[in-house]
Image 1 (tube, rainbow, N blue to C red):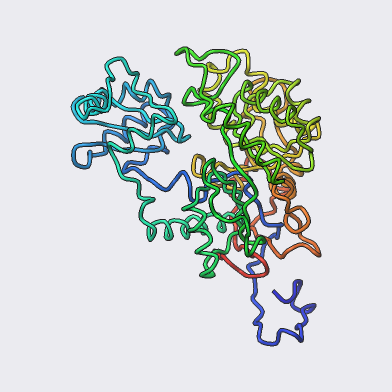
Image 2 (image 1 turned 90 degrees about the vertical axis):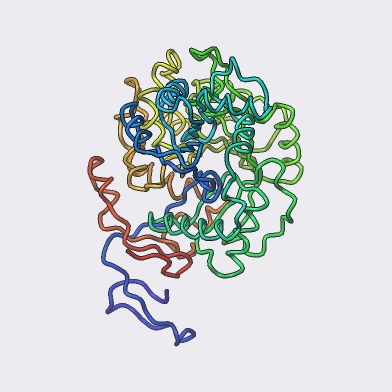
Length: 467
């Protein structure tokens, strides 16, 4: 990019005589968006046969499963959205003799039918006579070892998958992604793409526990940089894994995933190295436990440790978040997609659910994210969810103003990754990361936002995607 403005105002830069000017599509330019919580190459790597992510009701779920023919002697599916217990019952009814497994869309549980449990028992994997069929977190590894081979083991496949995912984000006007579940192998794949010159999307990597053997010396930190570590203080609400102050109907208290001792050890290491820490906290118990840990360690606000999701938080917890100087990344689409079935789960905690406005008023730094591929990256849709009150379960306003939503998706997200002086704004001396849209995202009515389309995305002055 050598100049910007109407043709009559454009001037050549003498030091770059070989650069050809590119005419961008006519539209509305915005600072490129930053997805502050996504899984560019993580959760979507092993895609099991049948895609159930479009089924939001039991009827649609049954219809999709009925149309799927089990490949060989096992049915594998992913993206299940209905409640886990119901999912197991449907699998039992439709496939009484064929092992059938469906991964939850939140990637925190696998639902298995009775035939699958019998197969596990026959193979000597254990006794499952009284098992509910819902396998959480660490238990999922057992099913994956027995019933499938992850496509992630194929490096060539992974390279192509990352390229495909990169184009999806660029096509949504994003120039940067905070990748929240990076292991050594994924990091090497991303760094390999950087070395080959095929990585155009800026990536801020948060390394999964036990995946930090590679050097912390990043050769091109503007493009690819490791920010710190990722921990899990609980699981997902839809899988009964989020740790809530009230029990689930099935008696579950949720799942910590990473033990408190393991979290303390990683947090101490992050503090000593001066690295960021991102902690997955969906339930109020997980959040309060994380706040206790940060307070006990005396972590300075300048470290910019962050909390992910925060789907349930009391006013007292929000005040502590603000006092400790923690940043927060939220995904407004979860409020719309989850809340229909989350109401009976949350019960009296509903008043503290998705408290975006309360956190904003408390002065907590907030960035927006998609949680892709759990919810596909859709920038106009996320803005619409952030600005809409349709997802509010009570009279308390959860919505962002349009200005606040746009800011959280650009400047706020940049702050969470220590990029606030180079990304998130369309002015000198910031990097030339911007996107062009067919409509003005600042002025569109909320009900029309989802129809907006990205026309082009520029990263570092290079046109990287065009419709």
